[in-house]
Image (cartoon, rainbow, N blue to C red; front, side, top):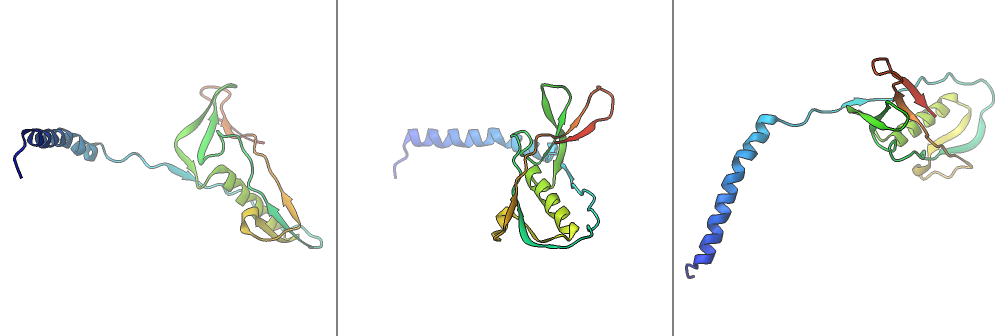
Length: 153
């Protein structure tokens, strides 16, 4: 192999560039990892079993449809009529659609009135399917220093 000056220059440039980025790599250990998000678990109260006969059909709960700003695991807030935002470092345990679907399934199961309640993705044949739309699921602040109001539609 011959000692090509162009190859030697390329090697030196690579070594210098690598050396220039070493201090930046060291800084990442000083700064540390980003703060972990607080995970909020939605646990609505489960209703008491409803007296009466049990139906012999199965019900599938479809994955709810939600606008793009709610179809996430982030916890939504609204401070005015025309802007939406999210709490910093706060997330639901899953996407909002999946959290709401699970809560609805649990509520119907707790009623003990329907023979079989499943998610629509469980692959179980059912006679009925409940479809849901989530329009609002946020904390609304009407005053800058006041507490929020939870709005669910």
